[in-house]
Image: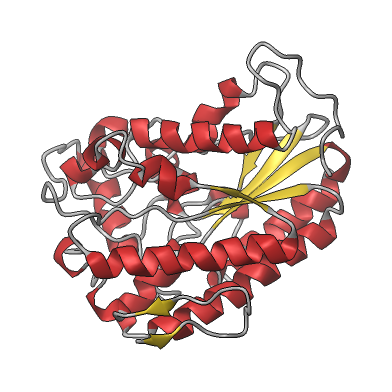
Length: 333
C-alpha cells in the first residue's frame, strides 16, 4: 500500500499489504457492525436464549461507523444490566484515574455467561492497586475511534455516563472537576480506526497518518487539561494472529504510530500487544475465540491489567505489592 506517512520523521516502516484484506476470514459480522451485534446481544439476554451467540472460532469485529445504529433500539435499562459500568460512579474527593477508550475498556463481551458482570481490565486492576489506590472513572464507549471521540460515540446509548455528550467533553469535564486528585490518564483507542478503514477500503497509509495525528491531539488535549499528570497509551493486540499476516502487519504499524505519539507527547506505553500476543499463553485463552469474538476473555483482561500495573509501578504511580499507597498528588510527573 506504499510507504508509512513521513510526517512523523522517527517512524519509517512500510506497509506491504492493504487493509482490504485485514481479518477477512474472521469478521463475519463486519457488515452489520458492532451496533447490530449489541442489539442482538441485548435481545439474547432479555429473552434468555444463551444458544444464540456467534459462530465459534470466527472473531467478530468491533468496527462501526459514526452513522451506524442498532436495527432496533437498545433499551437503556437492559443494556445497563447486561453491561454494567467498570469503575466508580462518582470519584469526588477520592484519588482517581481517567480511562478513555472503546469496547475493550468498556468491557464488552458476547459470552452470555459474562452478562451482568464487568470483567474488564479496569475492574480487575482495582484490587491490584490496593485499598488506598485510585478508583477508575471509565468513560470508554463501544465503537469509539480517534475521530468519534471528539464528536459522538456510535453506541453512546450503552455508555449512559456520557449522557449523550462526546467522550472528549466528558473527559475534560471530569478533569476540570477533580484535577487535584487525578493520578493518571489511560488512553485506549485505535483498533476501530483500523477495522473501519479495512471495511471501507481506506488506504492503510492514510489511516495510519490520521491515527497518528488524532491520537497525538487527544493526548495533547488531555495533558494540557491536566499538567504534570502522566498519560499512558495502550497499544493494540492482534486477535487474528497468526493466520492473517495482513492484520498483523497493520497492527504492528499502528503500534509503531502509538509509540511515536508517546515519544512525542512524553507519555508511557502499556504493551498490550505483548500481553496478548507474547506467546506464553495460547491466544484462545486470552481472546474469546470460542464465541467468535475479538474481545478479551476474563483471563485476557487480567493480562491487560497486569501489564498496566507494571507500567504504573515503573512510573511510580502504583505501590509495589505490599507497599503503602501513594499519597494524593504524588508521582504524577
